[in-house]
Image 1 (cartoon, rainbow, N blue to C red):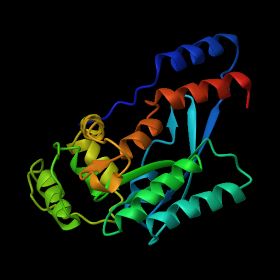
Image 2 (tube, rainbow, N blue to C red; image 1 turned 120 degrees about the horizontal axis):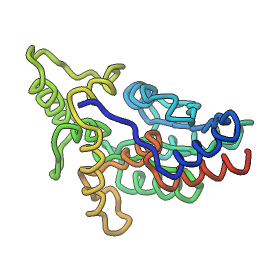
Image 3 (cartoon, rainbow, N blue to C red; image 1 turned 180 degrees about the horizontal axis):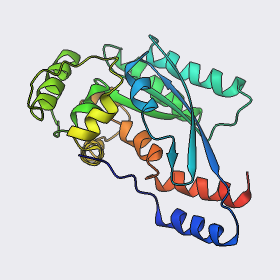
Image 4 (cartoon, rainbow, N blue to C red; image 1 turned 45 degrees about the vertical axis):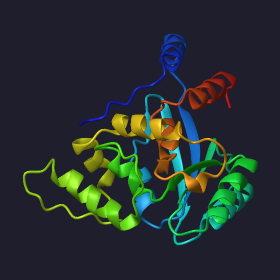
Length: 234
């Protein structure tokens, strides 16, 4: 199912008002996204539109084969050593086989350092699967691979899709055959089950929808920041 990018009405009105006065000024929003995986997550997020209405997204990606807490440490290091002021710094990692304490500690450290956290339990692939159907019971990493293949092939005439972690076409494939809006809805419903801060105990869960909403211009908090940036001329 094709996805239509929507943007907050307040932002549309503000752009329209500015256009009547003069040529609208382009807003550039700077994102630093540090991923645990080397290919899967970066390839997916790199496929998002770089321009949403008058917002131009400037992405910097880092990642590859590092543990949960080291993903957060890397994000802090890159942010603090950069000459660029980032509007958002995100870390993306899975529970996978990491110990509960390590996983929870990484989330706490991200929060303490004003870094947004798109964590998944158990695997990032849960986000992919939610484009096709809801999932409310736990699965391991190998089961996700099989479930994604079955979901995609159910939409194809030729049932020959094989899931590969480094596939650069997953973003377009998911939006063509599945529904990103449905994935967001399912992920939000799952998040309502979280009660407390023992995040490793909640499986399945994925906070990837929060990052996706920002990249789509669907986050009210992010839009308000962009409006302030626009009006203050930063």
